[in-house]
Image (tube, rainbow, N blue to C red; front, top):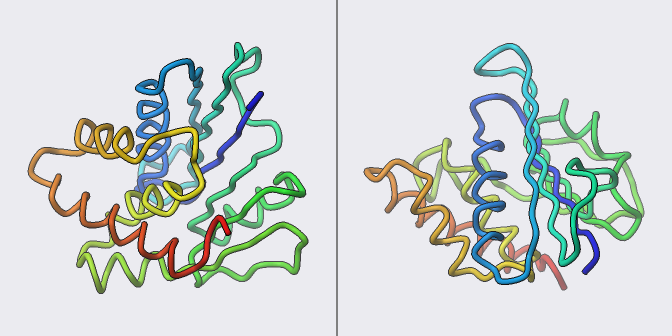
Length: 181
């Protein structure tokens, strides 16, 4: 693996930046893996556009930002509209099933992310951790145990159990959606 790029996008308050930090931290637990994590968000603390980017490589990373994502996650229509054209032809797009997507050659998975966060985890704010459970199926460079360890380190202690449940629901959602097959 020379370079693997992930872009997580949505609105401020959806936790995409935290999810990017967790992926980057989990990657640091893996021997021989280099990682960069960058982030961007609008001036509004809640509701404005936000984006987290993670680059993974076995080589030295000479440019820290995502150029052409291997994986794009978009939790808002605005984020999808802004970033879907950037994805590599052999890349993957993951969106909430409420988002209107274009017909593309890129594999696109529309999943009930927010619905599952509300109905199964009973906390919409865990959608970002559900995304990590979904990505666990695709991020073969990072062990599941490393993702779990980074989640536990980064979420508030009193929310660890609900976040670990959200991670598991995301893993099941990936399996049911045949992601990575």
